[in-house]
Length: 177
Image (cartoon, rainbow, N blue to C red; front, side, top):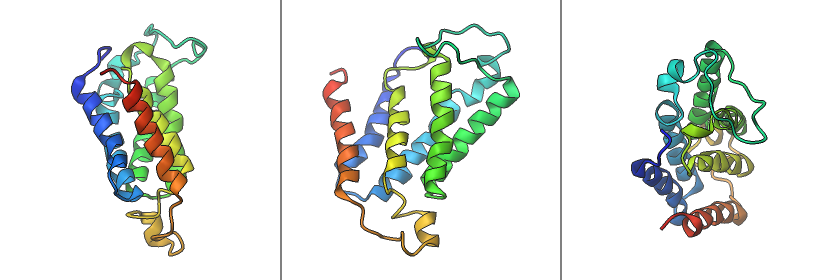
């Protein structure tokens, strides 16, 4: 858990690399959201939550966030389910902005709870989730676009793509060779 898994880093990098191709933003959201859904039980710890957050378990906290304490186990399960539903909503483009918030808030809470269980690319999902909240990524391949004709296949401004491409460039230029 504490070491960097090469397969995991490749998965994240390939998910973000989708931006470099000339594809629609809707495809990025579907692919990225699906990876977020798959990531929550495995890397984020939903599958072993009872072992990770036993009452009174002492963990290493992030500086400046050491005031955060894990909730009881039942509430932690609810937190993870909310995060999972948010990622699923991002994938489907259903209630898109709300889904982004449902993913982001629990994600950063869980992220700052335990410093030892994260690798150097874990912040990336949180950053991409935050960026997706700002973008108009629910225009293509989305339930929101299907239900609202004004959103369906509407123009997506260039700054949306530029923001994601810049994030990809920053990752590739500063990551380990």
